[in-house]
Image 1 (tube, rainbow, N blue to C red):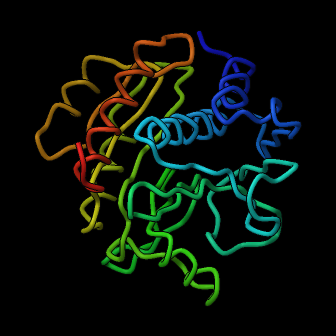
Image 2 (image 1 turned 60 degrees about the vertical axis):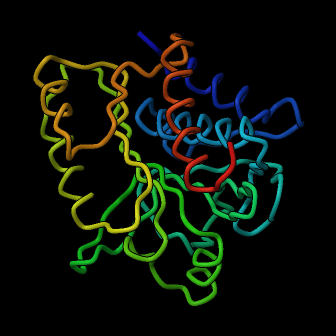
Length: 227
């Protein structure tokens, strides 16, 4: 069973935090929140593997913050209460950001928390400037649900995520990611209209990491262009 320390070590290695003399700060020091930051870290790796740049950025301090702060729960993309981190990315001629635990407004007007999301960089800058909420129908590129299970997984959270996706319109890639699964969860996620399932993702399983990263790379290639 993957532990909190395993997840924190993976985040540190993937984002090269301590190697650059920086510190990792999880506002909620739990496996659930660490798992989201871990998935965000793998997304940054996918961008870099394609020749893009993925720079850890503080909302107040800018690139390469000394303390890398990740939220303890869902919050505003424009909040400066702390120097919250996101990943600033450029892939070919596309500029976008990767966020953890950001609240979006859906087409219906409902508020949604997306565990890991990719959002157009210009739209994100406008959100911060106007202190508004990002919208799922305005350049949301990727939505990933991240669930760290310590007990037997059910299908409720996957069903809720599927409802969230119906309130989005611009996504290029959707995924449901967890550290364990059940037959019922696998059957539910096998639906054609559902998100791509990655129900064995763990830093203790390098092959599961490769499957997730390669799948995301393929979708980013199609979107950004190039071979």
